[in-house]
Length: 618
Image (cartoon, rainbow, N blue to C red):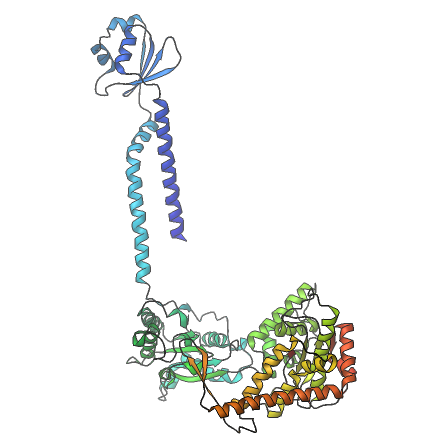
C-alpha cells in the first residue's frame, strides 16, 4: 500500500510540473507576441513617438503616445539602457525633450523562481524518472530473488480459532491426533521413554469430511506455530523452484519449532514418481525428492510435525508413506447418524433454531452427508427462514434444505403440459410403490412432481439405520427401485420416455459393478474382471485393461444384461400387482404435487421391513 501511495505522489508531481512548464511557456509566448527590435526603439525615441519605458532586467516594456498597446523589446543585460540608447544615436536632449518616462523594475521573486524552474525543472523530471525506473527494477529484482521462497502462511497458536470442540463426528480421529498434541506440548515426556516423535500424519478422507478443519484444531489445541500451504503452491513452471520452497518452508518451521506444517492436497506434489512427463528432471519429482529428504534426512532432531491431507492416498509415492515419514494415517470417514447429529449441533450453535427442531430426525434424513454438506444444509435452512420472514429456523426449513442439497432448488416456473405432468406423476409413483413393496428397500419420505435441478420429479427414501455393507439382495432391490419409473411408464401408457435416462445409467453401473467388481454373478463366480489404469500425472482413469478373453467378455455382457432384464421384469410385476395403488398415488400427485411419508402410508399401507436404500430421481 505504501508503494502504491508513493507512485501516486510521483505521478501527481510530474503532472503538476509539466502543467507549470506549459503554462510558463504559453505566458512567455503571449507576452512576447509584439516585440520590436532595440534599434527600432532608438529610432522611435528620436522621432518623439515613445511615451514611457519600463526596464525589467533585460526586458523592456514600451508604451507609445499614439497607442495604449504595450510593446516589448530586449537589451543587453551587461550594459545600462541609457548607454545603449546613446550608442545608437539617441541624445540626452531627445530623452529630456519628449519627457520620456524611464522606470527600472526590480525582478519579482516569483518570476525569478519560475525562470529558474524553466531551466532546472526538466533536469529534475529526468532525474526523477530515472530514479522511479530504477526503484521499479529493484522491486522486480527482489520479487525474482524471492521466487524460491515458501508461500506458507503462518498462524500463531496464542489465540486459537478452532479446537477439537469445533470438530464433531470423528471421535476416533480426534483420539489419534490427541497424541500429536501431547507430543507438541510435552515432547520431553515421550523422549525420556525413548519414544520417537512422529514425523508426519496423513489425513485421508472424502472431500468435505473435515481434513483441513482437523489440522486447524490440532494447531489450536497444541498452541504452536502453524504453517499452512497447498501442494500446488510448491509446483512452478521452472525446475528447482518447488524444491527451493520446500527447503525454505522447513527452515522457517525449524526456526519456530516446535511447529506444525500443514500441506493440503499433497497428492498435487506427492504422486507416484516415474509416471509423469519429463523424466527424472520433472519439477514435481524434484519437489517430492526434496520433501522426502526434509522429512527424514540427516537432520532428525527437529520438533516439526507435518500434517498432510488427501482424498487420493492410492496415488501417493510409496516412499512418502513409509514409516519415518508419514508414521500415522488417520482416516476421516463419512459420519454415521450419531456423528451427523453432533455435526449439526456444532453448526446450529449460535443460530436462532426453534426448540421443536429434531436434529436426530434431520441426521437420519441425511445418509451419506459429510461435514461440508451438513454445514451447507444448515446455511440453506437459515436462508430459507430469512426469505420467509421468520425469526427462527424451524423443521420445515431444514427438511426443504435437505431436498435442495440433494436435488437442487425448485423450478416452479418450469412449464409442463398435462400429458408430461401425468407421465412424471406415474413415473414417481412407480418408484414409490416398488420401494414400499420390497422388503430390502427403504422407507419413502417424500414424493414430488415439482421440478428440482435437472429432475422432472423426485422420490426420496431414507434408511432406518446406517449400513456399511450391502448384500446382493439389497443391490438387486436398488436396481428394481431405479427401474420402477420406466416400468410404470410401460405398464400404464404402453410407451416409454427419456425421463428414465439417469435411472438406466445408474442401473447399468450397479449391474456392471456386481459382475466385474463384487463377484456377485452366478455365471462368472467370485472373481474380479478388468484392471483399471490411470495416468498418475492426470489423476483419473483413462482405460480399463482387459485381463479376460473375448469369451468371458461375452459372458460379462450377458450377465449384466440378464441382471438388468430380471430387475426390470420384477419391477413390472410389482406394479402390475399393485396397479390400483399406483393409480391412486399418481392421481393424488396430480392434485397436490407433493406427498409426504404419512400420507403415502395412508394411501399404500403395506407392512414391509426396511433396511437400506438411495434417493430416487428421474
